[in-house]
Amino acid sequence: MDRVFYTQHLRNYLDSKMLLLTGPRQSGKTTLAKQLPGSCDYLNYDHDEHRRWIKEKSWDRKKDFVIFDEIHKMPSWKRWLKGVYDVEGIPPGIVVTGSAQMDTYKKVGDSMAGRYFQYRIHPFDVRELFETNHPKDPQSIVEQLLLYGGFPEPFLKADKKFYGMWKKTHMDIILKQDLIAIENVRDLQKLQILIDLLCERVGSPVSYQSMSEDLETSDKTIKRWLTILENMYVTFKILPLHKNIARANKKKPKYYFFDLARVQEKGARLENLVACSLFKQCQYRNDCFGEDWNLHYVSKQGGFEIDFALSQNQKLKYLIEVKYADDTPTKNFQLFGKDLPNTPKIQLVHSLPQEKTYPNHIEVRRLGDWLCTW
Image 1: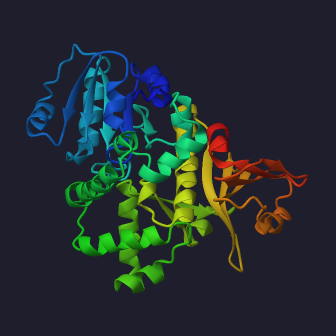
Image 2: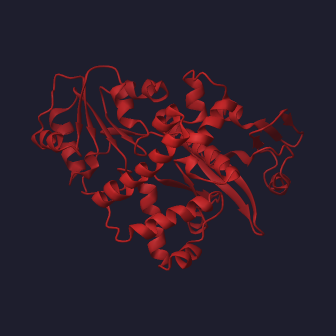
Image 3: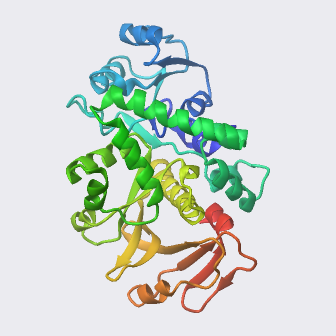
């Protein structure tokens, strides 16, 4: 499936900047890179022969661009890439792909600033599928995403048995191959238990102390493991909306899975789907258009919350609540509306017979349709 959603932007800079494509394993980064216009040479650092060619710098320079896959596993990879770019320049273009957050693993102090653009590639979401003329309507796309998640292979296969087998092998590769190659984690069994606990708590603020008690380890270790899961693109977190960033970082975060179909409870899975769509669109707009979008949630003392808050340039744009079938506006809109009277408040409902709006900036919208257009 052609991912023109991304390629229409990447091709504009292929002849002037290194392009760094990061994102979850098997989210389609390599396929996307190969869809860029022109001829390419593909080298994967995990492949023994390719690894030798990379170290020898013996790729085909008559190609339009060269793809370096998983090169962040090479010691001092940033310095190596910087040297290639500074000495040889472009062409050929340089596209780097990897299934870990490359800016996290700072193997060397050398900066590549000014030499690359980074794009964070996500699995499919409702909007990308709709805009690439997927043959189904937004409602049906949502249903398929809830069953199989947005990773290209299981989504396009659309087979429940296949997804079950894919899900297991996907996590095994991340934990038993990718993780070991980069991080020193001794207790993989407890890390797997942590993943299972997070699945059960999707949509709820996570207490490090509570997690540490459940796993009988320190909260410092829990924080480290959660950071690793983020760096490996297993999960992503959103923080509560707060004017003071430092204070927000001290509050309880919410964690969501890139593989949304992994979440069992159907309401939490639907919220995870919306989180994936909003998070992807924020990063897409930031990476491809140079905008400044951020995703948070909103909370008050007493346990009152609104699922999501979208902001642009630090200005709140939307408050969003997610429901499966309830079309009665949440009372929390009224509670938070006193402080944010002019902020649009959107209740996204999956099964909704009729959309509605109210005089106090509250809207009840079909979830799939709204995610295609915001």
